[in-house]
Amino acid sequence: VSYGQSSRGALIVFEGGDRCGKTTQCRKLVERLRSQGVDAVMWRFPDRSTSIGQAINAYLVEQSHMDDAVAHLLFAANRMEKREEMLRLLSGRTTLVVDRYSYSGVAYTAAKGVPHLSMDYCRAVEVGLPAADLVIFMDMTAEATAARGGYGQERYEKVDFQQKVMKAFEALRDERWAVIDASGTIDDIHQKVAAVAEPVVQRALAGSALGRLWD
Ligand code: 2DT
Image (cartoon, rainbow, N blue to C red):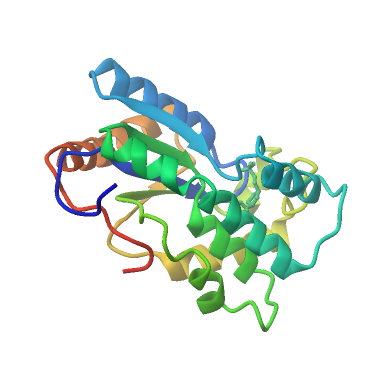
């Protein structure tokens, strides 16, 4: 496992509000990369299959109540428990296309506005994880998503909360983010995704250094 410069897979993360089409775009990107001979797999966070993930699932479907700090730490722990496997895959030249990551972790908790869960605190517990080479942010207003008939039954799927999440995501943006208008057709969005993702995959395979959160 190395953050140094050797041929490796890319870590590509999709972020955005609920129901913006992230999952569809993750799948299509993985298919496209594979058809080009790139070894790529799709992951998602939270990973609801682990025991921590099951606790998170119960929280999201409102079958359980948790202190906000505990929920935050569980989401982070759910990534930490996958850290070694992520690094192993990346160093084995597998590109990971991930549906949500630490950026959601920070944005959703920070959006709650709990004074002791500041943005800095939220970020701190993610330290030790690899940074995404590229964050593809699927941009869509909370109102537009709701108008799509988007929201389901889960804890955070409410317009006023989603608006706060969008603000928190804005504060996290840096030069590794590509903001893509999520209101187009699936194919149009896919073309835009491919245009930003493919060069990043090639740079990783050529040996670009893997970053760390939040350098
Ligand atoms: P989906 O499975 O539909 O993407 O919804 N979340 C996610 C957090 O609050 N913190 C996190 O670290 C992550 C990864 C976003 C999962 C919901 O969980 C929220 C929506």
